[in-house]
Length: 373
Image 1 (tube, one colour):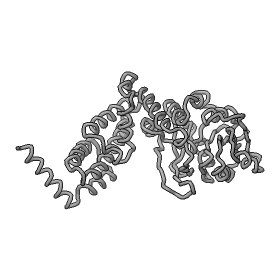
Image 2: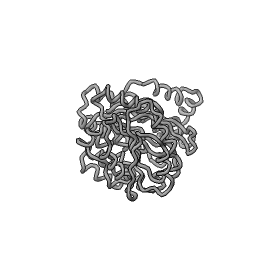
Image 3: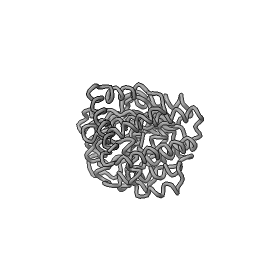
Image 4: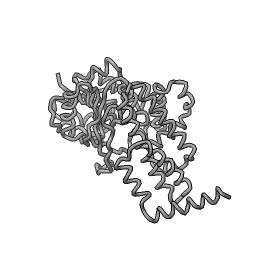
């Protein structure tokens, strides 16, 4: 019996398939089966797979196109490995990926699922950027309220623990089946991400976004609402059914300053207060002790302050009054926690400059005169 099953459904993936397969066969950890499910491909996918004289490759042909989610569940049932490692047919695993994840799961028996950081590449394989994901279970549980903190191609998990305690992928979902499974796991079991770039995630023009359109946005939003519903209660989240407020909250947490430009100060204050309330319920739900709760609260405060300073920088030349209001909000929050090095750097960047100080004083004086009049 192999230690690991590398599970890879593929549908018409001939363009990048050979590179993906080669990256798995080049792994330094040899004890695996490579379970490839050809999901009714009509291109040269099957021919490419069959061109390999490799006993670890186990090819399953679907009689017709089942779709990714059903193919994943079929693969989970057929997998013989103790650990399941996912691999998409257009991504690339680094040679030591499996070895490092197996070692981690062996030395951390309390952890059920482990992902990794990733590098983002374009269709030609050139580096676009790097992404650091949260590594500790508590932080992952928090971040998963707003976005998916795992890369599907980068995860490895204990098969029997997941199947017996959590279940399979939700076949009602076409795109976010991984996100749905991860948050169900996260609610009950310990998870982690390795702080190493062990996968290359490809920007693919034939991706799920092109295939499923708005579902790409709608399914994660449904999952977010359900997840937060466990923390706040279902009655509270009924007021978020249209998704507008939750979308705005998610954008504030992970979006760019430009994406937040349409939010008013009232909106921002409401979002910040709601995040604080979610944090309180989060600590209760996961039974965090006083020390853990305080540590997490400081992390939440630091993230909010960072976002506010990004917005201050964005607004400074556009709308100084709004920038000052945001600065006032950030400063009030800073009295609640010790200044971290990162936040101190932001203060130096945005406040200490002599020219900026003069502009702040000038705008403040103008506002005071207006109020007096």
